[in-house]
Image 1 (cartoon, rainbow, N blue to C red):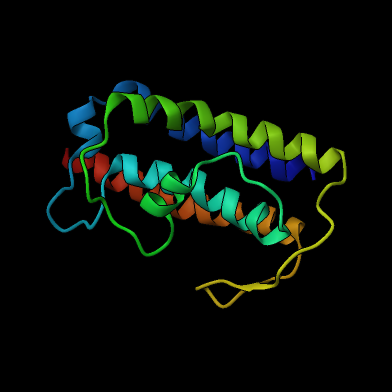
Image 2: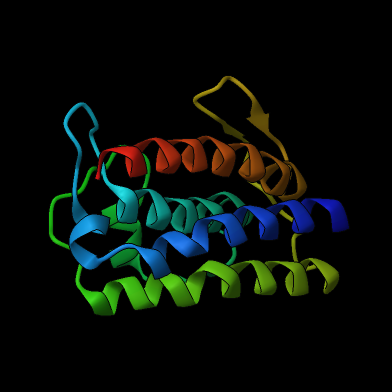
Length: 151
């Protein structure tokens, strides 16, 4: 599992500069032809990891229900994100992965509600969810790289 966590951290290290190098206005901009923006994609990555790994394991998440409602699958940007919310997402970007690794080492992931993903892959364990999460983050990192060309 060390490799899985290393890949996730690499993904997050590639995502973090978007929060540092783009203005609040740029983070909130939805370019023509896109249905979301940079900050939505980044927050969606954080929310999805928590849902896949913790929620389906029946464990408490590190994120608020409000974040889940704004950024879960099927949502789209419906408000201008504030700097305070950007800062919260920035704090969660690595803290969630550090906590997941610590919890994995404590062996707290025992139960899991099987989940069929939209790709057709069925997650049957928290480990499946952690591995699949890397695929999901890769998809959204690609979207981030596309959006940045238009803002």
